[in-house]
Structure formats: C-alpha cells, structure tokens
Amino acid sequence: MAKQVIKFYANWCGPCRIYGPTFTKVREELQGDIEFLEINVEEDPENLSGQYKVRGIPHTVVVQDGAELKAASGRLSEEQLKDLILN
Image: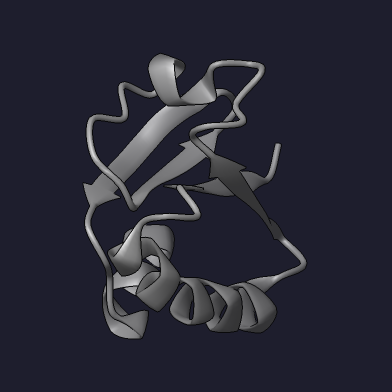
C-alpha cells in the first residue's frame, strides 16, 4: 500500500493557514506514489484525529499499511515536510 500523508488542521487556525501552501506545494511535487489527505479536525466524521492522537494543529502524520510511521506537530517548512515523508 502507498504511503499516506495526513494533515490535520482547522479553518480558524492561523499556523494552519500559513502551512497550507507549503503542504500543497509538496503534495504537487510528490503526488503519484504518495496519497495526501487533509482533515479538518472540526469535520472529522471518522475521528481520525482521535485515532492518531492529535493534540495540536497543524499536525502531520505519515502512514503506511495503516500504521503510523512518523508524525510532527506545528507548521513545517518545505524541507522539514519532505524529510518527514521521505526519510
């Protein structure tokens, strides 16, 4: 199964809005083998934020075969996000 990258955010969150374009840019560069998801924590019917123990936003989780590989809280730079996903 392909790797998934999940970004948890909320519309009212300032750091989330700043992080959004970075996440989008990296998604456009790496799309294909990696699936990117964006989950609004206030509209999370499957409770993925609870499943991945999200305590603060923005929060990014890398998942493969249903298992969490890595996670990072806060606004990541483009380099930090790529490192989280690829290494």
